[in-house]
Amino acid sequence: MNLTIENILLIGSILLLISIFAGKTSYKFGVPTLLLFLAIGMLAGSDGIGGIRFDDPKLAQFIGIVSLNFILFSGGLDTNWTSVKPILWEGITLSTLGVLLTAVSLGTFVWFVTDFTIYESLLLGSIVSSTDAAAVFSILRSKSLALKNNLRPTLELESGSNDPMAYVLTIAFLTLVIHQDQSFISIIPLFLQQMILGGAVGIAFGMLSKYIINNIKLDFEGLYPVLVIALMFISFSVADFVGGNGFLAIYICAVYLGNQDLIHKKTILKMFDGLAWLMQIVLFLTLGLLVFPTQIIPYLGIGLLISLFLIVIARPIGVFISLMFFKMKLRRRFYISWVGLRGAVPIVFATYPLLAGIDKANMIFNIVFFISVTSILIQGTTLSIVAKWLNVGLPEKAKKLTATDLLLAENPKAEMKELLITSDCFAVNKKIVELGFPKNAIIAMIKRDDSYIIPNGLTKIELQDTLIVLADRSEIFEEVNQILKP
Image 1 (cartoon, rainbow, N blue to C red):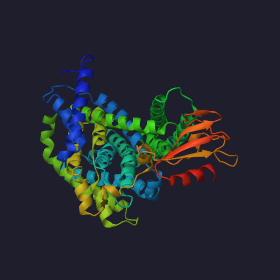
Image 2 (image 1 turned 30 degrees about the vertical axis):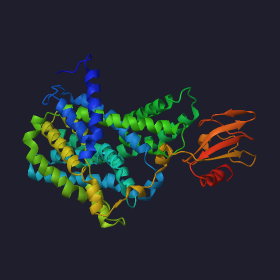
Image 3 (image 1 turned 180 degrees about the horizontal axis):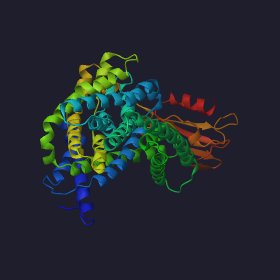
């Protein structure tokens, strides 16, 4: 069946519905949700029962890049700076040096066991060198894993920030495969340009986005997530236009925004959480449709060999060497090595050789697809088990709530107080969004003169206002008083 304008909405919505229902029950059988989405796409494809013929790598790459924008941005918004700060350098080292070491060690192995040239081998290694943000975010959160000693923020920071490094290495080695007269040294300026400009654009647009969100007065609350989507794509596009890394730019921009007080932040976070799930489903369905299972069969043997080397040797090499200068228990290093999930990102990156038309592009794509599937299947299904074996897990009830968790939690507010704003209050003439109010307390209403106002983030506090504050426990009011009268 060929996709047409007439049937694309029907087919797309049916596949989406099937994916949602399949995802609901998948973890009862220990199967990662993302793998179900991929399998549904493959079953619907030309080699499956659906018979949908989709063989457009360019369109798949476009869908992949758009989807990764949402997935990375949503992950960045959920990244708590307080949790990340103590392990910032470990995360950065893993997402740069760790990715490089993984790419080089795996590429060297591929060179020995295949007839690939050294640059083709390193290209394959680069494509699968980063952990997949969609897979890590999805599986860690779906399983509600509570991990000891900042392990969770380390894994989420690494997976959210290492795609830019893998992208740069992929583009660099693809260039060397196409232009074999160039030297390896020629990719260093490209790497520095991508990282420095991408990081600079991310920080700049994070600050600019905060200013725009908190100072523009939109008539409808639902427009604020739309505004953030526009700012996200502009950040990516500007970074790409100036020669920086767009993925790095949007992740840094999102991390900055996620740790600021924003107008309608709860609405924005909920909207992006839903969009991230939608994009994960769309991305995996699309890549499943793009793959022809019959073409993968000839590469099962070599694919399994490369995949096992990546999981058992290349990933641990990257992790252990990267973290050798940091104080960290051995079992934590082993667990970080095991959570080296490959998912949709390597498959998206594998479309670049296809579009470039290099000789072994199809072979690389099929091997990468097999590596991603085996990684999700082997590592994704065993995260909880390995956490128990290595004693790095915590009981679910011991899991600490982040600032984002507190903001999105629907905890009943059992305590109420009326607080009068006097001349010595810090809050006088300040917008609510500027106060830094606790996440588990809200200003439900403001009594001003003889009227009551239902506030939002842009509401300005005036002298002699009476704030009606709700909190989930009485101790929170001490923190509220410190904010109002420091």
